[in-house]
Length: 145
Length: 145
DNA sequence: TATTAATCGGACAAAATTGTCCTTTATTGG
DNA sequence: CCAATAAAGGACAATTTTGTCCGATTAATA
Ligand code: FES
Ligand code: FES
Picture 1 (cartoon, chains in turn cyan, yellow, green, orange):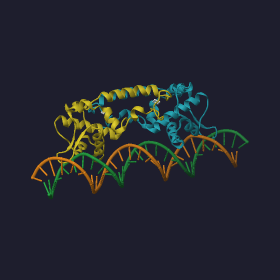
Picture 2 (cartoon, helix red, strand yellow):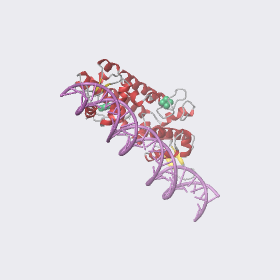
Picture 3 (tube, chains in turn red, orange, yellow, purple):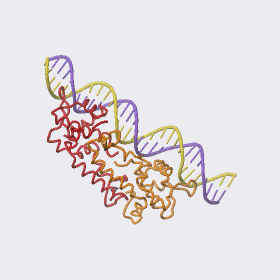
Picture 4 (cartoon, protein in one colour):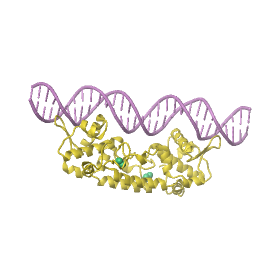
């Protein structure tokens, strides 16, 4: 509801790649889709976008697959993934659907909406892939059910 | 991004009806669509849903149209409109797209996501149509641009 | 009572999003 | 060099959301 399906898959995939990269494993889209319970071909498309945006790193050929540099696990924040897939409408859009959010000619919900959106943005900007992967590692959180 | 287009139109329409009902005017879907800049026929469909959910009141025939009782302007909160149109997926959905949000087997984003969603819910539950219409009345806010 | 103006409701159409399939390209290891 | 493997990329299909059209229903008024 907040993010598109593509974006949800993208985040789940990135977190799974992070988890496996921590173990030094490179993973295929088949494995990723299996582990995050997502449609394989669609997931492949999304991973292409993440690759182009330098969020994950891909290697072709046998022994190839997806991985994330240790440094990027800290540097890549959720807002980068959301922006790569859903664009910035989450930040510039108006809650009531006016052309764009504009404090000079605000919709009736503007003030309250901006409050919440700011919280959301702050959260996305401060949450790294590494942070999300650690909960998984110790079995506190899940990428599928 | 947060609400569906249908929901955005629904809220804008309800706020406009509120504004006009304050003046004792009953309004047609043609006028509403004009004033909130939305597709007429689609807006009509959405108003049917709001009518069925007793959020707005409709009158058929000449001199007919939509109106909202003074009491309902205070009693109808945004969450009722969102629920009528988008259902409750905004409340029960998982931020990362798992079947449903479940604290017992949470996704990696659960805690942070729930925080924000709680703020959103609180905001929607405490914002009335009357409140939104008053800003409009004094020219501080707008339903179209 | 006939006309007219309005919502209701159902079927249909267009557009966007989600999802599939297949061919090409790169890379590895024998 | 060759065969096998994996991502890249493009075309296509299904589904959902958004949007349109038109006849049926209701009510006011002349
Ligand atoms: S103008 Fe609507 S949210 Fe800012
Ligand atoms: S389980 Fe994902 S948001 Fe609660």
